[in-house]
Image (cartoon, rainbow, N blue to C red):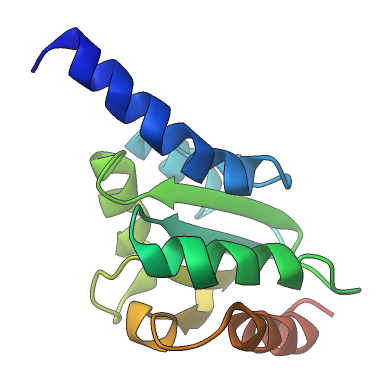
Amino acid sequence: MSMSFERYMLDMIQPMRDDLTSIGITELRTPEEVEANLPTAKGTALVVVNSVCGCAAGQCRPGVADALQHAVTPDQLFTVFAGQDKEATAKAREYFAPYPPSSPSIALMKDGELVYFIERHSIENRSAADISADLTAAFDKFCG
């Protein structure tokens, strides 16, 4: 692959990363970063599996951003990028059993254990407002 193509792809992907990092979500880009954060996260942790697909742009990322305006939110916020940071995403998915890999998806963990999960099929045909409502209900249940 030419360097110009790689640069182009990085330029195309960066705004998709920025949608989440600009609102305070920490990117985990390596398996080591995932391992250092997810199993030992105290309290609640939101993990967004980001993606380049349209439903990530139209529903997932906006839904997460809206939900994080809620009065009750998780203690820690993380994201991995499927298809871009493949090893980090694979490591994060180990914590989402029994759910099969899907992207985008959203996990809520409490003290390192999965307590709530939204799969792609529950994102792609719904609105950002629906996803935000699901998340805020989960925040009220598990983060309060």
